[in-house]
Image (cartoon, rainbow, N blue to C red; front, side, top):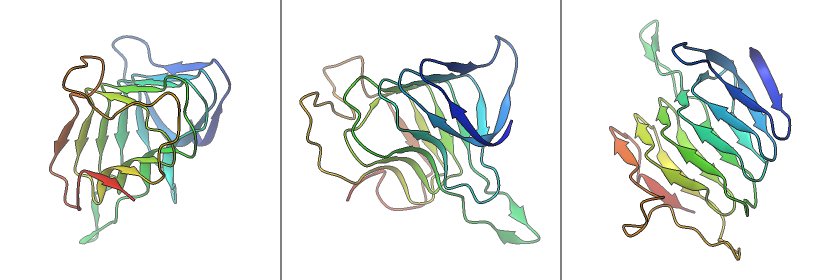
Length: 168
């Protein structure tokens, strides 16, 4: 798959057990869709790998792989972000057991944050998580809670940018 992949409502994109599936595309996810156990790489000039405008998306075990390999002695700036949440996410959107690596931003949130658990953010150039808007929702969630085993346990490794979580 290359280019932009429109994932319809309630459709899953996943690999079979024991196989490695690499998708070089931007994915636009819709309500109830899910992405599981694939590796996502950006096509040329990609701003994001997943645009999650749907409510209740589930993203599990996905590798969000940016492009940070040197080319003719010059290190490329990592492209874009892993996931962009453009607005309100009132229903449970879950991102778990994913690896975000070689990106400018891991997850860019313009509304309420999704439920994040057991993700690894590695070699992120700027911020692992950017929360850009004030949260105004009756379904208030947090990025992690020591008393809640259903959230948190995220790992931040080798980031070269500013804070791991930025609230702008």
